[in-house]
Every structure is written in C-alpha cells, then in structure tokens.
Image (cartoon, rainbow, N blue to C red):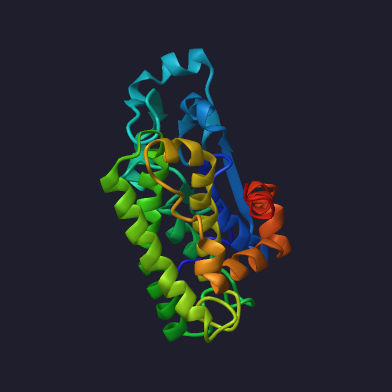
Length: 268
C-alpha cells in the first residue's frame, strides 16, 4: 500500500466537539494534526477546499463559480470548490484530507478512525482485528444517538413532542448499553482507553448543552432529558468525569464542561 505520510488535515467551524474526537486521539497517539477553521459566523468567508483559505470580498467575486447555497446549519452562501465536493460529496464539515490532498474523509467518527489507524503504540483502535470490530460495534451503536442529538440541539428553540421523544429514546438506548458495558470493564468495552471512550466523551458532552435551554424546555412542558443522568447512569457519569480529567481531553475541551460541573454542585 502506498504511504501517504502520517498525519491529517481538518477543516471545520471551531470550536467543534466533533473535531475534538480526532484532536484528542492525535494527542494520545502522537499523530500530526492540522486543524483549520474559524467561528461558525465566519465560515461563509472561507473557501472550502483541500487547502482552505480566508476570502476577501474581492476573492468572492473572482470565485463566484464556487458559490453554493448553504443548507444544513448555514443559511448564507458558501464557497466550495469542485475538488472539495468531489472528495467530500455530502459537502459537510468537519472535512478531513490526507496530507497529499488526494483522499477526503467525512463524518467525525470516520475522521477519528483515520487518526487511530495511524496509532502504533496506544491501541486506540484495539490490539487486533477482532477488537477493532468490537470498537466499530460501539461506534455504530452510537450513530443513532449522535444523529438524534444533533437534530435535538438544532430544534431546542422550537421543541415539539415528536422530536423530544425520539431523543429520549435514543438517549436511553445509548446510555443503557454504555452503563451495561462499564459493569465489567474500566472503559467502554475494554479495560483500556480506545476511540470508543473518546467518541462517547465528545458526543455526550455536546448533548449535555441541552442544559443551556432548560427554561425554554420547561416553558414548553419538557424537562431536561439528562436531568437525572448522574443518578440513573452512575457508572457512565463517573466515566465521563474520569475522562474529563485526562490531560489530552482537558487540554482539548478547555472549559466546555465547567458549567455542567457547577450545575451539579448547585442544582437550584
């Protein structure tokens, strides 16, 4: 197999918990990672490409052929090259590229896997093919939760019964599996850290931001889905907090979970 060099380039809006998955794994496995991006409001001012760059108004006029109407998450025009669409056919971010720019990788767990496959010492993707497949099982099982919590967080301002119940069902299914796994292993599925733990930590930390909309949910007759998380899923809660203390996690996420820790100390 042709060697393309160790490392990866990622383009996304920042900060983005989905990008944190790859960043945490890269720090643990010592894999070079280049992350390029800007705050969400500035992403329309970037050229989406294997070599992304910030655009001036003059640049936008010159690149009119690449102007496309934003859909998911972006309402304004976006500038995506044909090469970007060829490599990232769904046109989404985060978007990752091999160092030679020939291969595009999309979806956060796939980008996470791309980093872990370059790990030669920490066994982030397991110690053999069977463990790697078990890791895939956990990651695939989390896809429904990940998909639903993205829809849920987008819809918090205008919550309705159907969306709430879908999220509640996905939450219970996902956490029941994680809790059951942690009854027999120190980490999710194994007695050592893998990308399953990294993916769980980032996805669930992002989901917990429903707490910022607690009052609006109550106004519509809904409680926080995670309201009793520490009591109902004790092992999962402890695992989340344990992961939060690991240097590679804490230096990546910064103060992201601090508000939640304060809320637990003063639930009133």
